[in-house]
Every structure is written in structure tokens, then in C-alpha cells.
Image (cartoon, rainbow, N blue to C red; front, side, top):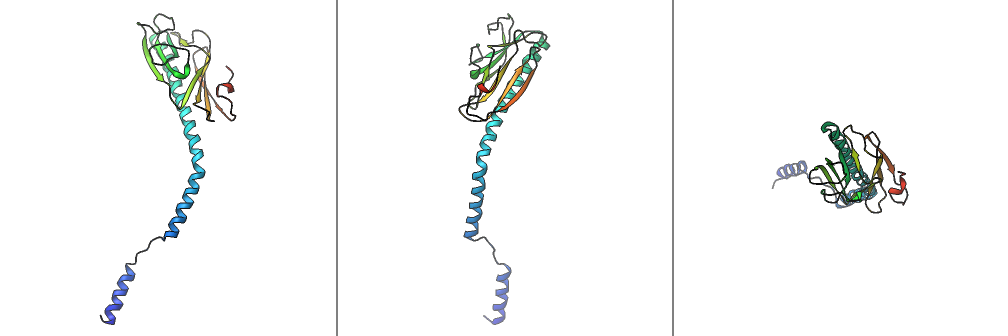
Length: 191
């Protein structure tokens, strides 16, 4: 190989030089990334928990709005009650929620009644109510007393709770309550 060819070959190789990160640089970047993620992970957990609570509260809010709207538009009595299976009412709101057209006004689901919707229980949040049922009359007002339903996180997690207040006129509004103590979700609200 002549010296001229050697110079040309060296120039060609220097033009196509491959640049890359060293192993040390990669390890430093990965370490910094892991440290940042470890600080951010707990806040993501609480964000997800809060989102699940608010999602369930919004779903329950929509069910109350649907029941009231159906009562007004169809001119019928609509009952909302706790239910495990969507076929009969029970006394535990945390097991599910059912809304049905109450044709005989007895606040119990029977053969001539029609189910509007059913919300089964979830593992992420629970419902608690201060009334055994809510019934809307054909004018959209509650038949009976006003009340509230609380959406709480499942288990002992500290998270935001959402209370739905149902007025005598049948309107629903929400109240958000951050749970900052280790007390139960239900104890933070007065009915």
C-alpha cells in the first residue's frame, strides 16, 4: 500500500467514524432516571386512586340524573336502591346500585317493574348512603326525605371522598372531601 492510498483510507475512515455513548454515561443516565421515577411513583398512586373515586362518583351522579330525567319524561316513579345483583333491593349501598321504574310505588323491585340501570360494586371504591332508597316522583322531586351517598376508597387508603347530596327537589350536587386523617371515610361527613 502506497503512502497516498494509506492517507486516503485514513481520511475515509475518519469521515465514517462511529460515535456512541460509553457504558459509564449510560449507567449515569439510567441511575438518574430511576431516582426521578422513585420520587414520582407515590404521587401517581394517589392520583390514580383519586381518579377512580371521582369516576365512580360521576357514574353515580349520572345514574341519579338519569333516574330524575326518566321520572319527568315518562311521568313515573323511579326508585334507586342498593342492590347486589340488579334484581332486588337490599340495605348495603357498598354492594351495588340499581334504578328501576316503580310501577306499584312499593320501593321494591317486582315483576311489573322495569330496570333502568344497575351499577355493580367495584374493588376500588365503595358507596355508603344515609337512606335505604331514593324515589323520584313524576315531577322529578324526591318522594320522602333528602339524603346523601358517599363514594369512599376501598380499604384503608387515604384518598379523596366524594359526597353526593340529593335535595328534596331531586337535584344532585357533589362535595369533595380530602381524607387527611386515618379515620373512616364515612366519619368525615355529617348526614
